[in-house]
Length: 391
Image (cartoon, rainbow, N blue to C red):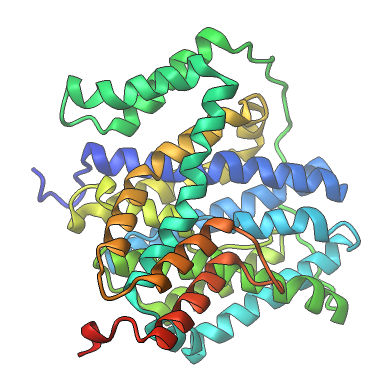
């Protein structure tokens, strides 16, 4: 039964659902908040949500099926966060043009193979340290979430420990969801759900400007490459997969360019989503691509029914979404920490990469993920770390 092509284990399903939740909860809320700050209409918001989730989910679904590698994602959450402060001064046509230029930049890096050559120069322990630092930010947020709602998060923690006791086939993360939802229903007064009419995606004629290229396109391309594609590719390699790096980057760039015609800011392979679906939490290695298939299907469906889902997302408390994200990445964090700090030939370079990634601070428009690898690599060279492995 387990060799049947369409068999899904409980770990496949759990990881796929949690991966999709990462994009369809916090990511969707961020887009909705950004759209409000930008003054977009409800139809423009729905068009944005539909295109990035439907195309993003479909892209990752197709890549997972073709390559039997767990690609998961939708859009760049960090890019959406950047837009919340940078996009207000642009018209929607200028935004579409900037998004398209960002997609073209990413596609060029993929087709030329430049990014692939840069990635091969990075020692694996530094990649592990970078991933651990990025993920730690999400896991640590469980603590303030518990402070905000001890009952809900306390029950979720109980579910984490009780689920494997009930059955070894039940992943702890499913216990977190089940018990967390119970706690939410018992202690949180959810507001009523409003109705929203259906709206088709709206075509946007892009307008290309030099200001948009410098202020939006370049930063967006850097954010997508560093916070999403680099993290995703590093996670896949860390977990023993060999993704087609150039094609992965190129497809993300092309997807972003297509999405821009309907107001979408990005379509790409997701960093944390792919890290989750490619980890041991997603099951046996040869079946983990099925977790990504589950994720891709759910993400694409979310895009189709975004006009219905957004009214539900709007009533969920932020701490609940934060808690689910933290628990979903806990296993990935443990694996990354173990892999990074067990390598004795690297010391300070690993520590520096880890600490810089934790900071989650961008400098000169470059994310902490890229700086952690850059500073870690320079430190390793200056101190002569990693030579035992090279030999």
